[in-house]
Amino acid sequence: MQKMIFQTIKEMQKSILIIGAPGSGKTTKLNSLFNKLDPSVCAQMSFRSFIDSNKYKLKERFDTLVFDEIHTASQIYCLLDSGKKHDFKLIIATQLSKDDLEVFNLTPFDIIEL
Image (cartoon, rainbow, N blue to C red; front, side, top):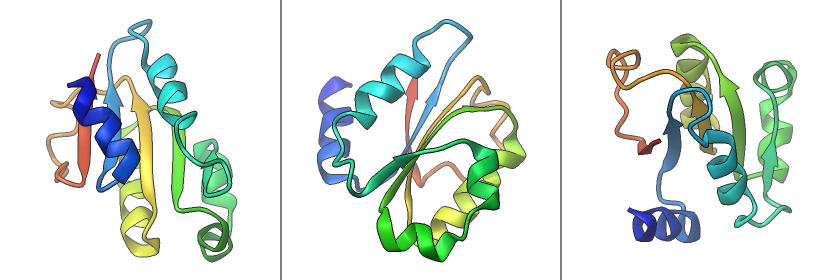
């Protein structure tokens, strides 16, 4: 599993979804992955600041966006939809389970379960 994760970060072919219970290490894993990316093309932001942002201006500066503490399936859908429209790669950490997200096509994500 570790080899796949680091290969994904290096090549970033797919977005990454980190799921796990509270205290499982999601934020630690998210920060570890974020620190492996080039900060000139990667930004960590809150869902609210993303919603309020100009996506075209974000795309001018960043290829990858990182989100911690995404709480609802609708927020993940919103991020996934914007990621597709604006060609962003995403790294998302959430307490939602695969079952909570089964209504979505999760194939754009490599999933890390903690």
